[in-house]
Amino acid sequence: MPSGPLTSLKLELAYFSGHAWLKRKGVGVILRFERVRPRRPTGFQPRRSDEITPDFLDRAIRALKRWNYEVISMDEACRRAVTLAARQRFVCLTFDGGYRDIITSAYPVLSGHGVPFTVYVPTAFADGIGEAWWLALEQVIAQERRISLVVGRQERHFDVPAIAEKNQLYEFLSQWMRSLQAEDLSASIKDLCTRYAVDLTALSREAALDWGDLATLAADPLVTIGSATVNYPVLSNMKDAGALREMTMGKAVIQTALRREVRHFAYPFGDRQSWQRKHMAMAEEAGFVSAVSAVPGVIEPAGHTPLFALPRIRWDGRLQSLRALRVILAGAASP
Image (cartoon, rainbow, N blue to C red; front, side, top):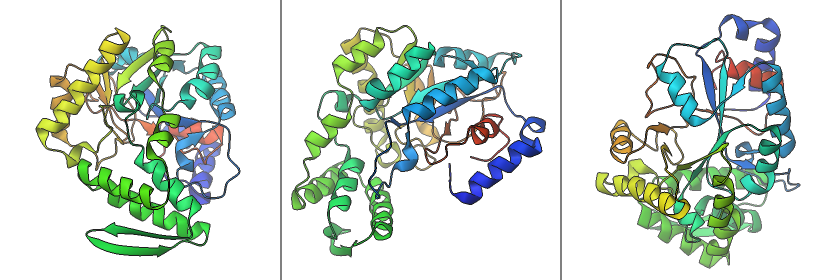
């Protein structure tokens, strides 16, 4: 969801004008979060939009209850997507990426409120072998003023003396890396980390939930553990057999490790460029009952929203306004 002063102003105006209440859409919303942790003092934070604070999460849940939204599980969200509309609107809370701060910062808030939520897990990270290339890229750019790497078989050099240049380079390189095949992406980020002494393995392990953390979450009946493949690849970059294998193996690993059925799937990254219509059929073939995207939208009842392309609203952590949240939940603003 794009942020900035203009977007914030539009949402505030929609709230006070009553536009959101007159144009309310759908029966509910699936919210997508990634990281939940206290604010950091550093200036360069290219993924700030993917973070919320524990305090904002607490305020948001209190507001949802005050606004008479029902916070429901993913199983219940799927049921309501195929039945006639209920009188009470709902919100389903989901968390992507399998970050450790889900249990250290988010879980105390969520369990304190007694609300259900879903965590989508890429299993290679819980195994300690996943490569969080986006975090490594951020660390390299944060610590260096000049960066060299091979882009498209050509050695490129970038001067990044200030935050503005660092943000521009992060955007450019992250989009480029997302376009690569899995093996080329791995080689590129390892080369970059070797050049600038960043420990990719340690960084990835430190950020991720391990199986002990996941066992703690799985023991809570309010927590749904879903799958997000094994290695969190961009599925649209993969051959069909490889994409299906990522889906089926991710599901099988979680079920074996936690001895718990895994019914729900999240497309890695989830935006329109990261998966295609054929992956919906693959998710069903892999034995899931739903698949969520990061394509914005609300849930329509009576089967009008496909269960294998469920939209979610990604909350931009740079926005702190509960009024803006209420407008977006109404489906009256384009996220």
